[in-house]
Length: 187
Ligand code: IMP
Ligand code: MG
Image (cartoon, rainbow, N blue to C red):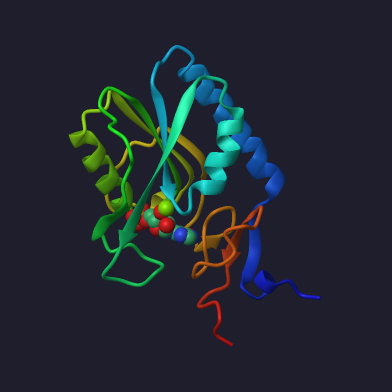
């Protein structure tokens, strides 16, 4: 029988094994860089970053804590960020003096991340680095220095492994490319 997501899936872009291997590699790289750094806080951007965060932190061997932030984007379609973003859920702690690693699912135009970075900067952390699972460089509208990137991908709408298709399928263990013009629920 066809699985519910198969209707919307054009192709698997990154399979589960490839994802897990790369996440482990990123974990080792970050662990090497942060071996001697105190007060490290991973800031996961909800909701897309949760699967990545939970897998990544299993590969970190230095002391760190985690916190969450949710950003809402409005003023355009659900698949495109308008550049108009706001905080939907803020961190629950003071980050002054802390070494922050922002954990994101994907950087597309860069608007969301730029907004987050501006906010974090006003709170005087000791440092801020970015770790994103995916990046679509061809879609970038604002330049952002990414410190750790899992995979650079082409300009295609993807879902799975934290990323949603109209809020569905975040649980899939792989990253899939969405068929053009598909909308969950539409027949
Ligand atoms: P940006 O502000 O344009 O960089 O968009 C970033 C946000 O848009 C991400 O955090 C995702 O929530 C969402 N997004 C961008 N591209 C995709 C995609 O291909 N699949 C699912 N969500 C995406
Ligand atoms: Mg996101």
